[in-house]
Length: 282
Image 1 (cartoon, one colour):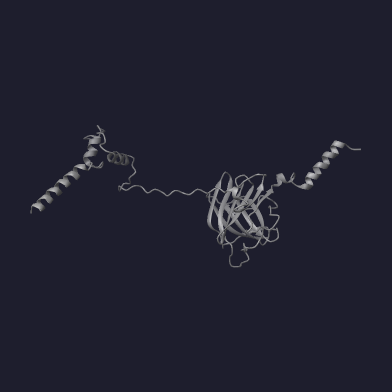
Image 2 (cartoon, one colour):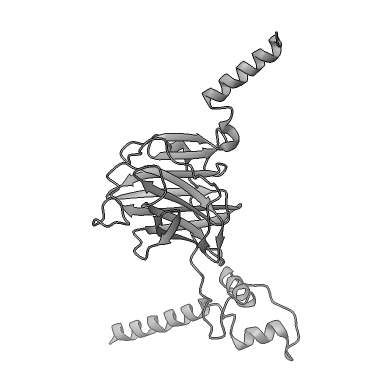
């Protein structure tokens, strides 16, 4: 009996102690009246007695709660497009650069890379255009009968991956699209994208076997309402040899503006003209 009476007294004391230790809620009617006066006018605010009161009051005043008293939902962060790393060219991936000597993925007229990832091949492409950039897999260096993967910038600002098939000089869009894990961005007047494609797909006319080697056709140009138009170059650049995804090369192809002085025949012609001018005519 004495034990039960002592236990009851202890319970009462603990209840009173915990009640005294709880700070009044900032939403309590009395607290609101004290902070705004008896008539809703701003009045004298008592200093906050602890950190919890400070946090709760500031949280309420900053209006982070909805009308129902719940915090507003926060949107998850959007992952930015990872920049293309050219330092990996020729080491862990193959690259083709077309443009000014020494250019990279952000300064070349056209840039593309490829690397094997399991049973897929990952491609990255970038070009100085506001329309589209593409790569075609050809067996003869010529347009016609080619499997083409393209990244198209549409009117909504999105960059989407499309699958095409070259019928002569015309690219026909194919509904069956082998691309996956698509990423794309339009920034600084460049269309840049990244996607994966299976190494092997069931044999079909519009899809080539990437286990095999192909000439790579490089193309880019304007787009109208998300549809590609004729490429910028009358004769799109093409790799001078067949490319294998099992060999990581770093290939540079000078653009037209830099081909004049890089051709051995042109250099020889310049030397001959210089010699002729210095020696004079007989």
